[in-house]
Image (cartoon, rainbow, N blue to C red; front, side):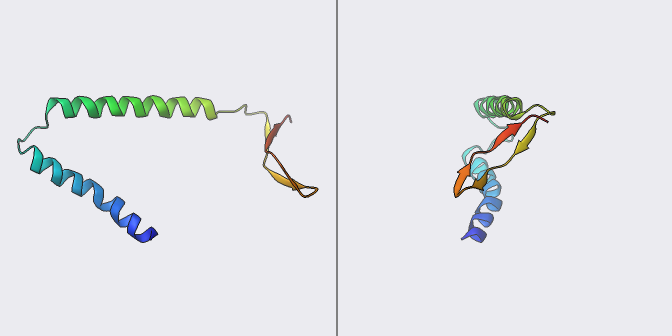
Length: 81
């Protein structure tokens, strides 16, 4: 099953290009398609920057991963140096 997913993910851009060429046979893509792709890229870039900012932690704080203690899972937590 994972191999099938990899094959589908590999072939998806080629199928998308074929569908685009069949639906829009002109040499240039339609303006609405270019505008929607540009808007999508802008939203993805904004989300990437937001996630990068939200994920950043203090460089001086040590991270302690989750662990078992007395048969219970202790949540991960930052500890001061």
